[in-house]
Length: 242
Ligand SMILES: NC(=O)c1ccc[n+]([C@@H]2O[C@H](COP(=O)([O-])OP(=O)(O)OC[C@H]3O[C@@H](n4cnc5c(N)ncnc54)[C@H](OP(=O)(O)O)[C@@H]3O)[C@@H](O)[C@H]2O)c1
Image 1 (cartoon, rainbow, N blue to C red):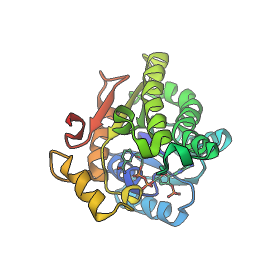
Image 2: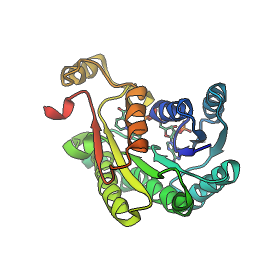
Image 3: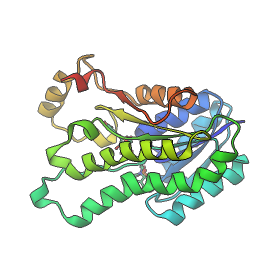
Image 4: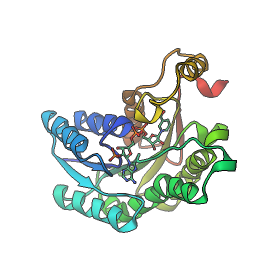
């Protein structure tokens, strides 16, 4: 059975990707940082779909924890075929008030974690016969920037160039791509005011916010798209046209 590791899959977009991969016949390693019960519940949903799941608590910004995540998945499933680097955090602060430690933490969780997990997975991916791939979850803010979250936008821009670098580095054995979602309804976007929500919606030509399933669709495409590597797929309801 082909296998996937999805970081930050206890909630939101990562959960959506984990469930989609299970529907497509993949065994999935579910990773969380603090939400153990939610991760166990995602694993139960994966098993309901007839696939195996293993739950691994690991702060993937820590290289040793990231390596433990990959080794646990590889042991449980006899290999790792696909990795989705989805774990991420956001913070809304203007630069004048931004603590350098918070800047570093956002970079650690959003960028270093993708490097840590990919590096640990590489030997397993190179051994895979399932057209192995890595997919990094970036953001529309990689392209647009964002005044109130410069560290988040910078981290997502870094993921785009990490993606291209790794795609060139690991070819032809392992494909590496990114997804740049627009506004998707999850806990991460749940704290906006009604006015912010209205303004954001007005900027989306398809007239709705994204759902985790929309991003999961893109992740499934990139997993299967054997002639695509080094790309960033924009999934934003047309918002990037503005
Ligand atoms: N929602 C959007 O509109 C949007 C748009 C563009 C890009 N994105 C990106 O999409 C990804 C998922 O976002 P989301 O909206 O689904 O966020 P979310 O609902 O806040 O979920 C974040 C997930 O990441 C996990 N996580 C956070 N820090 C971690 C760490 N150090 N180690 C391991 N796991 C960690 C969380 O685990 P716990 O549950 O254990 O905390 C949770 O599973 C992020 O990279 C985000 O930047 C989101």
